Length: 204
Image 1 (cartoon, one colour):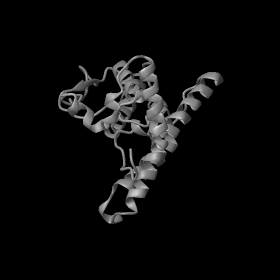
Image 2 (cartoon, helix red, strand yellow; image 1 turned 30 degrees about the vertical axis):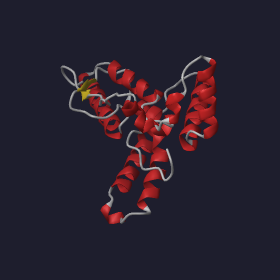
Image 3 (cartoon, helix red, strand yellow; image 1 turned 90 degrees about the vertical axis):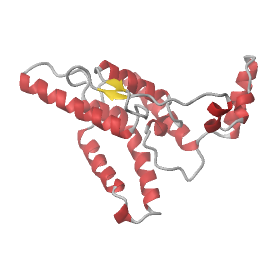
Image 4 (cartoon, helix red, strand yellow; image 1 turned 45 degrees about the vertical axis):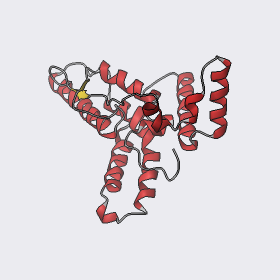
């Protein structure tokens, strides 16, 4: 991504440094564990901001229902999802919003105030999942590496490393000379959009 970078609503890019990175697959698996399926009318990825916040709302609803019915709380907790996901991309997301707001009429852009409300809610509710210290150190290191990658972008040295590894394995490097956004077209492919999250038989 070349600066100035726009605000990314596919928030996994803030963690992975690219669209549709590894954190998106992790979210997909978590949604499936909670019975949330994808619907045919949704044309974006699972890390879209609106999908995550709707999922958090669903988690809060399920917990409220469990408390009311005096049944065990669901395994996936909203406060843990907020800490594991939303709290991780929110700081760089806020920085991009603030940078973008400098170029706009504040009265015409409600998104920064809304994001500040979200930040306050996350700061109040997010709770880290209890994990062994060694695993937490590993998670922290991975998160830091992802943030560094996302902020730094892909350099010429990175591209040369990728090309070298492909050549070592006897693979073609021709596609690296084509801009990523043009590769599908160059290969005669048609980009498809994934379907939307769709609730299951009852709540999703």
